[in-house]
Length: 132
Image (cartoon, helix red, strand yellow):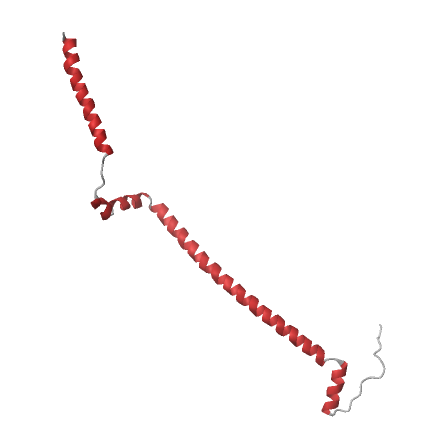
């Protein structure tokens, strides 16, 4: 008879315990986050405290990336400025060498000597090579 009574009364207690566990699970699933914790920053602070190293590393990488971008832009501008200056200097050198070639021609030298009134004549015989 005890087994019968335990079966009747004990089972109800076990079912009651089982129902309490079910209700607790339902309550834990439907946990709502109050607006106060969201706006007070508790959630953010928990995240920050757990990931301080990663946040510092990411901030460092962001600063390095931004600095590298500015440095590259500065170098590109410097290179383009130097290329333009080199182009101008090449044109100037080419112009000066052409002028020098024009002035140093034999006919131009004779003409300028006559214009200046200097009584000099050019050599009649060609130059001779001296071998040792």
